[in-house]
Image (cartoon, rainbow, N blue to C red; front, side):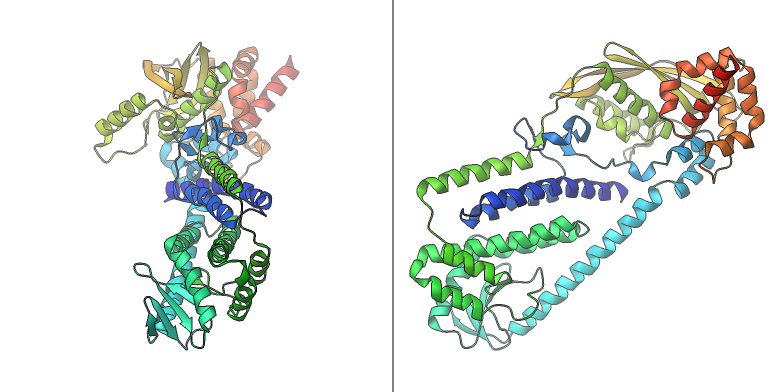
Length: 512
C-alpha cells in the first residue's frame, strides 16, 4: 500500500512539473490551432499513468537532478521506503535497542502512520469521486432512455437543455427538442469530430486518472484546461470544414445552448454547450485557417515537447568518490534498517538477479526486501573507499551483549550511463570484537545513553538521564576522542547520536 501510494505521489509530482511547463507553452501557442494545445496534454496523461519512461539526453526535465531522482526509468522524489523512515532522534534510539523493541517504537513514532493515514484518505477520496461520477452518469442515462431517434446516431429528448455525446462503444448524439436545422448541423459536425478523435473515450479515461491523483490541485486545473482545448479544437474543426461564414450563427448556437447551471458535472458526457462558452465564442470569431507551414511547424514543436516531457533525463553520474561515498552510505544504512529495496534499486541488472536468488533461497518464491538478521543487528558502520570499491565495516551486536565486525566489499561501475553496484561480497563475517576495544565501549555507552527518555528529542535530556555512562566516555580521554574524530562524518548525519557525539567531542577537547 505504502509503496504504491509513493509511486502515485512520484508520478503526480513529475506530472506537475510537466503541467506547469504546458501552462506556459499554451500562452506561446495562443494564436495556433487549439488542437496542438490539446495534444500537449498527452505528456501529462502519460506521466500520470506510467511510473517509468525511457531515458534521453533530450529530456526537458534535466533540471530535476536525474542522478538523484531517476532510477531504472523512474523519476523518484519520494522514496518508496519513506513509510519506515524515522525522525533522526527516534532512529538513533531505535538503533540502540533490541530489534523487537525498536520495531514497536518505530511503528508508533515513524512516518509510517502518517503515510498510512494519507494512503487511506487517498483511497476514500477516490471511492467518493468515483461513486459520485458513476451516480451522475447513471442519472444522465436515465434522462435519455426515452429519447426518440431522429436519424443515424442522433436522438432527441425533452429532458435535456444542451446537446451532448454519450456512450463508450457506440456513442450517440442527444439533442434537446426544438433544435433548428442549422443548429443541428453544427452540433452533429462538432460531436462527430469528438467521435472521430475518440474524445468520448479520452475524456472519461482522463477523468479516471484525475480521480487517482485527486489530491493534486494542478491536475484539476490541467483537466479543466484540457477539456477547454478539446472543445475549442472541435469548434475550429467545424469552422474549417463549414467555412468562416457560419462563425456568427455557430457562436449564437453556442450561447443559446450553453449549460445554464454551474456546469456539467466533471466526468459527464461531452456537451456541446459545456463551460468556457464565452472564451470559445471569442476563439471561434478570431479563428483563421492556418497556413501549411504553420501547421507543419506547430506539429513538429508539439511532437518535440511531448517527447521531451515524457522522457526521463539521461544519467549524468560521474565515477567519483563523492558519488561512491553517497551510494555506499545508502547501501550500508539499508542493512542497518533491514530494508533491501534501496540496495536493489542501485544494483546492475545482473546483481538484481543475484539479489532475487538470495532472497528466494532465504524466503522462498514469495520473497521480499527484508535483509540482515534480528541478531546480531547493525549498530554502526564505517565506509572506506578504494577506487571504485567501497569497504564497509559493520559493527553488530547481540542481546548477550556481544559485539562482532563484518566487512563487505561493494564494487561500483556504470550501466546504461548510470552509476550502479556491479558486485558485492563479504570479506569476513561475524568476527568477535574484544569487549575492551575502544569502539565497542564507546558504542555500548552511546547505546545506553540513547535508550531513554524515548519521548524526548532533546539530546541534553538523554545525557542528563545517563550522566554516568557519558562521564565514562569522557574518562577514556584521547582514546575516545580519536575514535569519535575518526567516525565524526558518519556521526554528524546520525540525528540524536550526532548531537551527543558533538557534545562529547566538545567536552573532551575542553579537558585537553
